Amino acid sequence: MARYFLHLSYKGTRYHGWQIQPNAHTIQAEIQNGLSTILREEISIMGSGRTDTGVHAKVQVAHFDYDKPLVSEELVYKLNSILPNDIAINACRPVEGDAHTRFDAVERGYHYFIHTKKSPFLISDSYYFSQALDLGLMNLAAEKLVGEQDFESFSKVKTEVNNFICNISHANWFIENDQLVFHVRANRFLRGMVRALVGTLLLVGENKLSVEDFVQVIKSKDRQKAGRAVPPHGLFLTAVNYPKDIYL
Image (cartoon, rainbow, N blue to C red; front, side, top):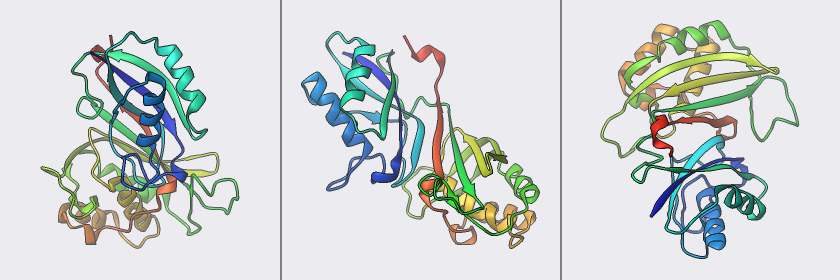
């Protein structure tokens, strides 16, 4: 039995997130159905993580097992031929038999996009936020996120995890093509974490929360002390990194 990593992208607008759910349209279901059709047997895939309803992925990785000879380039071509236009398979790579897309990922990255001037062309993949923002203050607060800390304040409540410790290696705001972009990388993320971080950092940018207050929000481990979760359509999973020796 050989294991393969699928590298893919998707626009999440039409989907109820990544994970298969009863009576819901999901990315995982679309890809599993496509693989099962092409390979003529039931195929299950495991993603590197779940993205919520409406969230997009420039980079996502999923693995599956198959016990017959497989030409990766042909599979990519056939899958892209039958999948919807808002899901693209970018590569299929053989990996070590015990490689796991979720547990072996060493770092993940997200970008959140905001536009401050109304645009009919950005409404499905960027959050329209018209209030004036102090980008300098937002970056001072973002610096406080870097390092290994407890981020329970930014996790969805009733999340079943062993702990809320994440190691954020990078967090900053920048301007690109007239959009504000928040870039964050970490070894792991909690459910709803990036959207809650952005919502709280916007309060800093509006001068409704000081940088010192932001630090206290982190330390409080209380979701009610943090800001609201911003809408999902501005969020993109942009990186999932693995040790190089996983790939054959």
